Image (cartoon, rainbow, N blue to C red; front, side, top):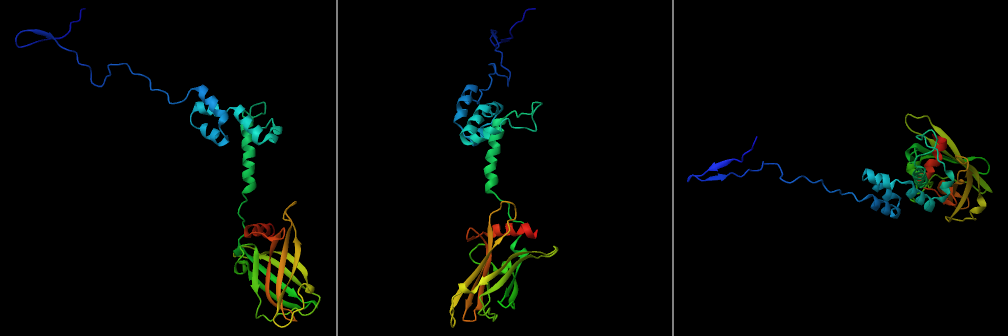
Amino acid sequence: MLAYAPVAMSADGSISHARKRPRIGVSAEPSRPAPSLEPPWEVLRLVGPFLDADSLAAASCVSTACRDTFTAEYLWSKLCCSQYPSALGLLPLPDNGAGASGRSSAPYRRLFALFRSASARRGALPPPRLALDDVTFAVDIFAASGKNTLSFVVAARDAIAKSGRFQFEVDLTGRNAAVGQGEFWSVRLTAVRTGLGVAPAAVEMMDAKVPAARARALFGGVRGETWATESLPAPVCGGATMEAEVVFEVSGEERMLERVRFGVMAKCRYVSIEDGLRYLQHFLL
């Protein structure tokens, strides 16, 4: 069957062929595929060796091709060799999600992540579970004769020193307590956990003799200092050596007690409030 083009007749009787109009919304040219924005595979492989670990991890999240390229084991093996060479001695690394062979499908990448996280665990300690508001100190002071000279309790929050360390200070002026002329007097310091809804717990931090000789002969209102230290038990095996220290300010020949300071020390320095609370919580919680 023959097909004829449509014709149109003008007013003067002439005949003209009508033009065929293209359909609206239909392109006359064939559609072309959208250009790919992803670089060629070869380019990705050239970039990988120049990226650090953070950049490799970020780039592997861009696309499937980037993931396959930037998680390649030869890249992570290079990072392990340069930053954690001793870690290579742990290979083959067991993997809970491995196949029947019991070996990881990505041992170098997992090994790098393991040692990278180790540095974060070393620097970040959890906050103490014990608060200053939960601690009260009980102090007993005895003269050389064994007679109780002064005893008191003080809340840690009320006695915290201005140093910002785990050091506490109590003003004894006006209590009229004197330890006398003996060679020494003794002090017992006890930390007590108090608080509503919890059973009290206590740990003795010090029971030591304070040498009177450290406070030189004093006359009139002249003040001097004397002190005592005692090693504290380590909360865990191999823990740092810590000490409890008590310092007295005394005055006059009868050595009137004017002020007392006490706290926890490590390497001759008072520890931070957080470290002091972490230490006490091993015994009070």
